[in-house]
Image 1: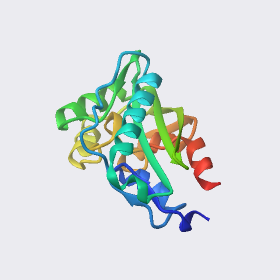
Image 2: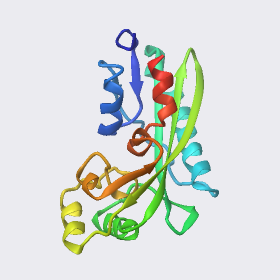
Image 3: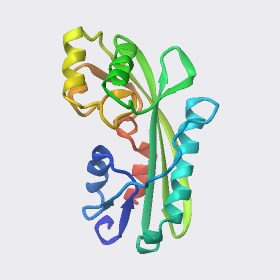
Image 4: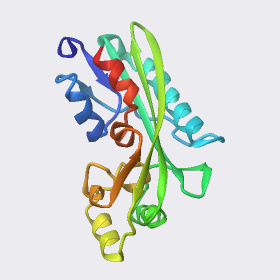
Length: 191
């Protein structure tokens, strides 16, 4: 059923693309430029959902949107382990990635993903969280993770399905939520 639909994933995330290619083999994956991803004030659940909605508005402005049966936008953020109002997004460089990973080392944190799906000219949004625990990371492991560049483009500076998978464990929730797509959105897309 999914293969016959034309689908645009408005994201450049390889993990999201991988998850969705299982449903839509011919999915087009192209991010949207110029979306203000600065988190608004509020809890992380609110922040990630608002950014996802901004991406939906930007997708509506793209001229190519009329060519697709389904449009998908997503955003993912982590809650700081000590402050539910402080989000951890994508690190901008190696130093910020190292600081984030050091902060998460040996601790549990919440990962929020918001996903918007547009079908028949109407948007529907999903927002879910999962809990991940990272074992204490040695300095050597932190250096390896930074040098691997697996942090690049990843909320919190890690990829659960990448090198961090050796040290991170899903405690509660869905792996797809940690990888960038709310699990209920995946269920919706399979129908």
